[in-house]
Image 1 (cartoon, protein in one colour):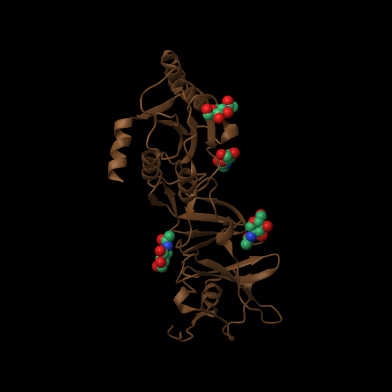
Image 2: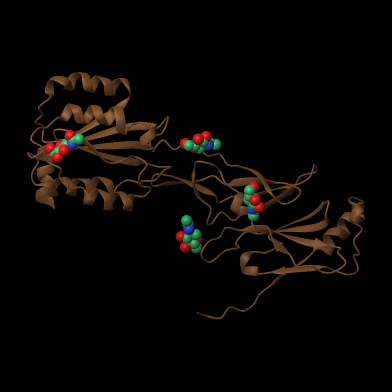
Length: 319
Ligand SMILES: *[C@@H]1O[C@H](CO)[C@@H](O)[C@H](O)[C@H]1NC(C)=O
Ligand SMILES: *[C@@H]1O[C@H](CO)[C@@H](O)[C@H](O)[C@H]1NC(C)=O
Ligand SMILES: *[C@@H]1O[C@H](CO)[C@@H](O)[C@H](O)[C@H]1NC(C)=O
Ligand SMILES: *[C@@H]1O[C@H](CO)[C@@H](O)[C@H](O)[C@H]1NC(C)=O
């Protein structure tokens, strides 16, 4: 690694006060303008990009934005509080505001949000600090919206706001696998699952996947909320073996998935679109129930896709 030359940006604050004193505003700050004060921080972090004078019960401060703090890995940014007019000189302290700058239930990308690029003091106390490059994720898409936080007079984030919208890409998907003896070879099912699952962004705030397997009866392989990443689901799906069964109770499989797999107890989320993917060879011993079972799914707004055997066979030849 190339040794970095220590660089510093002197933020000379005296001139700011000189200006306010001349203008007759804010005389209460009563700063000794002859002794120029300076605070220093790394220039590569853009320390001093924003500067505000500030006062709370503890005394006077200068707030200094440093939007690239955290780089090169991440440009989270932050705000420093630098004490002014204390008996002993005290260093500037980073406020760590990005930690609590957050919107609930959103997949956030805060790494490069350049927090502290905007700094506005509130005449009623506290201040507002913003990170214009805050983004959030819906599936594979990133939306950069920016974020602002209201900070209390005691330097705590009170609340954050950003124009985020609900991700319409959230899905609860239950895969209903025919594991009866007629399904052969099982590798084609595994190959299909791999291909399907690896394209999904799986997580508690994104798509969730549960799997049931049926033959003569139905087994919950794993629930919607069991795993929280695509990698975990792929590993689990590859461990699923065919349970077998002399009968192929497809209607029972679909009905059980609707009644049990799509419950909140098994991780289904309110207001999230429900999708059922049925993987079967088409043959079924309870066909007479199918019409009613499908209607029940319709009534509960569960969208269904069927993957037929011919398709699975093509997976076998492909893979
Ligand atoms: C943040 O910026 C760094 C450095 O430019 C980059 O390597 C990284 O991929 C960025 N992260 C995101 C989530 O954009
Ligand atoms: C973040 O919020 C928690 C809970 O309100 C608080 O205890 C903590 O001090 C805050 N952290 C920072 C760095 O502001
Ligand atoms: C976030 O999601 C949880 C669980 O889905 C829900 O209980 C909570 O009300 C949500 N919070 C907000 C602020 O939407
Ligand atoms: C489900 O079917 C499998 C395979 O036919 C059998 O081994 C198992 O005992 C059955 N389980 C229940 C609860 O009926």
